Image (cartoon, rainbow, N blue to C red; front, side):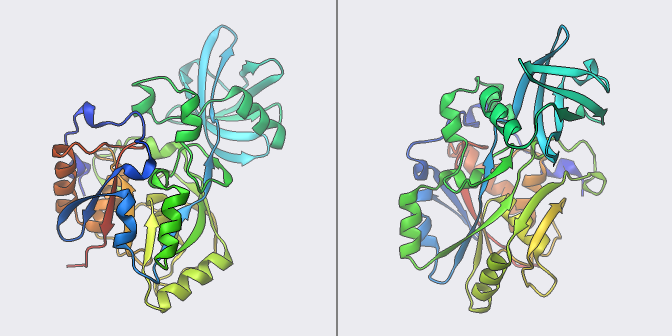
Length: 345
């Protein structure tokens, strides 16, 4: 399909630069053959006893570092861990770097550019590893807010709390699974009272999720890979719920991509541990997920393509126009939607 088909006009004033308080007060657009306005706090009303919510327990790390290569200022955003001391990263300005350069971030904390890749990507070998490297990231790094927020305002202390879900357990993401940002312990308690179970999966969201689609046709786009894990216990629980007639409700596109990567053609969720680069566009036959809770995404993005595959392209264009006309807040700190899978035509 042509990437242009997934374009729409979004006024800048619809981009949220802070979340609402409390989190579950965010709007939630229901897309189920029609459109209706609700709030995240009303989510239990759309769930049924026997359903399961699948969320992503990845934890965002302070993955943005600012340093110096001799006299040149360099900013790097880590996005993929490939060793105890080695990360793939996007560098700005990458043209000032070459293999062998050392970037100094602080006294006793630096990284050597071991390799230059395409698109501003570099491979960094740090002078510390493992837990010590994570300590230094916490000390000297900052939360890597998406470019559409960081271009509006600087990162501050509040973002350390706002850009983390209540599910966050497993360190490794450089972007939040934003659908999960709407949840609070109180909302989860009401969901449990409804007889709805929860299952944790892990997908470490990479900075590649924000990369624009540069191809003209979706067939020519190469999807970034991200590491994910579904335990044997989680897979067994999901299969048991599905067999008993319950619905699998994915909290976010990250959980959905992982679930679809781990599910076979018979609809059985398999344990999974590894990378996924699944790219979902209209025509894809969903094998695992029945309902998707997700925020509003960028024009011509792989995530807007995914939701269009799930609920229909024309339906999602109508939904997004409704959201724009009714002052919904877009992107990571914005409002939510609850999408019900459209039956194949």
